[in-house]
Image: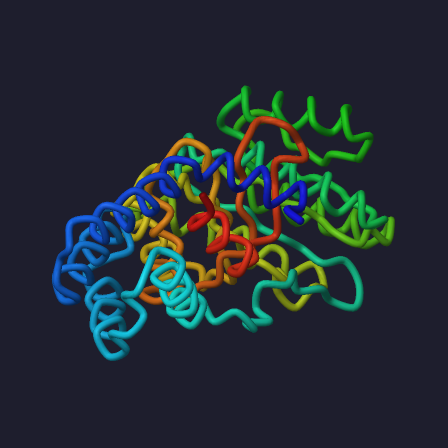
Length: 304
């Protein structure tokens, strides 16, 4: 039986799922050779932003066991097995790291990536797990960013620490950590200013926020999550690389999954950047967020 989350994922990934199913059916009807079939599937995965290296490797693996080209279900079964191997289905890095005291999660990403709404969804997710949560507004340059956090803080009934316009973001982070520790909050979620990965001096500011967390008695943020717009495709890989180089990311949240047919970006992030995709977001509701489960994800891609 399809779970509610899997059903939402199925709907969200409709474009990718339709493409994969359609191509498999087409190549089987056309009477292509096994090599031509594998090349068509490789082409499809490439169009879905799975990346040349991954696509070529999957195509090679398909050709090693040609007997699976017997029908649509056989092709899907084999492709599912290969994709799950690439994702590393038993990767325990997908769980949120927690410390003994307050666990601090920094959220980073470029402007427009869906960072603030992702923070609200994660807060909602944690509250449903009976965790206590505090928000920290370290984007002190955009009034709209603070207003957004204030809205979610009121809606979710959780405290928010913020600074005045133009305040030092690292100082706000430090004060928020002190407050969260004093109140024994389970989680402190830090919103940072959206910035382009090409702006070195702005990226350095993120290091200062990370350092401020350690100075208030916490060894380091338990998570530094990059919120990545799934629609960005190739540019998303560049973003992940730059942010990871600067901050040593612990994982990725893929937002706006309902707006793209290019779900293959998940493979590239994991294989090329060695970063686990921890959550995917696929709608406007607070509940439109799911822990990333490779088995469910691949199933949603290959369903009819």
